[in-house]
Length: 247
Image 1: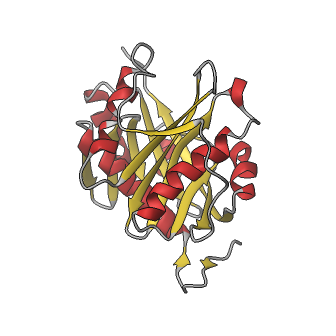
Image 2: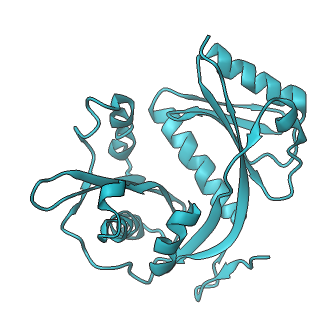
């Protein structure tokens, strides 16, 4: 079992905090980008830029899950995800055709301790042309970084001379917590410090806006980087996924 982190300021960061921040991040993206969110009894569904997601139910029935899947079909979506806490009965998901996916490792860090050094290869942006041809929907997501008051920050990394796009990261302010999301360094550029630079940029922006701790969910591959930057694992979760055919 993982123990909650208790900071010197007596703030306790829990897995429930991590779940709340991620849910609010998905809600902000959906609201900004023309998505939709709804509840069905104890279930909260969010249709955002990366498909339909069921956010951390504590209980569910197969009928309610199937209603969400049908709504995804009606909206022409290709993927439905479900995020769960450990110990939640996932039988209704299996009965609806979902398969178990990866396990998020929830991690947190005290932002009073500055992460790394400023990296001139990393830029905060509210506009970008990096996705213009290959992924215009992701380019449209930067509208989240332009919302006022500012609650989200997007950072991009580039090679110093050729200015090749090397990676990206987001942070999102939710109360006094900062969620770090969608952080990735493309394979040709890994192990060159871009990840640390991106993490510092988005965490510093959130800290300056009032965040006292950062939270994120890590894959096994990313955990090594986050641990080296002061993050500590406090728990884990479970994901389930359903891929819909585009008939």
